[in-house]
Length: 504
Figure 1 (cartoon, one colour):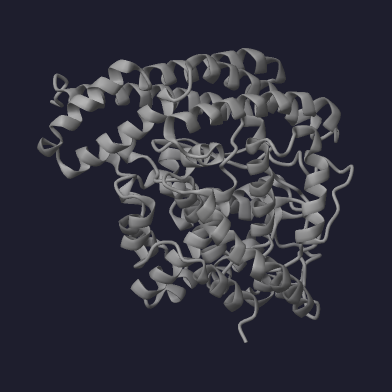
Figure 2: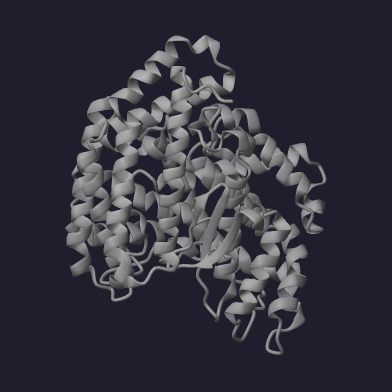
C-alpha cells in the first residue's frame, strides 16, 4: 500500500486526484473539438473553466506548498524517482500558485469563447469580429505573464515559455533561431529552383474519406500505435489529446489530396506513441508526464519527417497507398518510392503552417514567435497583428496575406487559448528530432532496411529507452545528452536538410 501519511505520500495522493481531473478535462476538450454540437459550447466552456480553476486551486494551495517543503526536508529518504517527482511537483505548484484562481477562471472562459467563435469566423475570413475576442484573451494572458514574471524573476515572455519548455529562455531561442534565419531563406529559394526540373507524377482523382482513413489506420498500426489505448477521429485542426491511457488523435480530410491527412495522422501518431510509452508506474504523477512540448514535438517530427518522409518508409508504404487509393487515373509509377519521395519532400513556401514543407516550416514558427513575444511585451497590439503578419510573411516567405486573415493570422488555434510561448517548441522539436534520428542511426546500423520492410519494433524500443520511458525524470538538456550525446545542437537539423534536399 502506498504511504498516505507522510508529506510525500500525501502529495502523491493529491497529484493522483489531479491526474483524474485532468483526464476528464482532456476528454471534454477532445469532445468539444470533435463531437460537441455548437449549442453546447457555452456550457462546456463553463464546465472546463470550473475544472481548470479547481485544479489550479488544489495544486497551488498553501497546503500543497507546505507539504512540498516538509517532503523536501527528508528528501534523502526518497528514491531517485520520488526525488525527481518532488521536483516536478514543486514546479507545478509554483506554476499554479503564481496566478490567482480568479484569473485562471477568467482566462479559461475568454479562451473558450474565442476558440468557439474562431471555428466559425476563420472560415468567414472575419477578422473584425474575431479581434475583440482575441484582444480579451491576450489582455488576460499579459496579466498572467506579469504575475508569473513577478513570482519567478523571469521576463514576462520567458515566464510563459517555461510553462511549455522548462528551463528555456528567449535569449537562447533568439540565438538558435538566428542561425536558422541566416541559413533558411536562401536555402529555401535554392531548393525551390533545384526542384523545378523534377519529373513528378501526382496522384489523380478523388480519394474517398473512408479509404483515406483505412490507409491511415493501417499505417498507424504498422508503426506501433496502440489502438487498445487510443483512437483516430476528425476535427477542424489536427491534434493529439486525451491521456496516456486513452490517447485521442484527430485529422482533417481533403478528398482531392490525401497526403495532407495522411502525414497529419503520422505526425500525431508520433505524439501519441510518446504518450503511450510514458512510464506506466508514474502516469498519475508529474514525473510521469512528457518532458516538454519541444521534446513532444521532437517525437511527432521524428515520426513524420525523419521516418515517414524518408525513402525507406516510402518503399514500404507505397504499395499500401496503391492498394488503398490506386485508381485508373493514376499510373502505377506514381506509387514508386522515388516518385513519392520527390512528392513528399517538395520545398514550396505556402501560407499554411501545418501544410508547410520541412525547410520552410521553421520560418512560419519564427514569424509567430516574434509576434507573440511582441504581444506579451506590449510592443504589438492585437489590432496590428494582420499588418505585422503580412510584413513578416513577405520578408521570410515571399508571400502576402493582406486581407487574407483565414490563411494568415487566423489560421492557428493556439492564441485563442492564450498559449503564447508555445510556438517556439515546434522548431525546437524539429531540431531535437534530427539530432535524435542521427543517434538512432548510430545505434541501429540497419535502420533503413528495417524501415523499408515495415519493421518498427527495434526503432520503437530505442525511442522508449532513450526518451519515452523517462517521462520528466531528466531535465531537457540532460535527456538529450543521455539520448544523443549532447544537448540541442542546431547543426544536426541544418545537416539533415542539406542531406535531404541537396545531397550532392
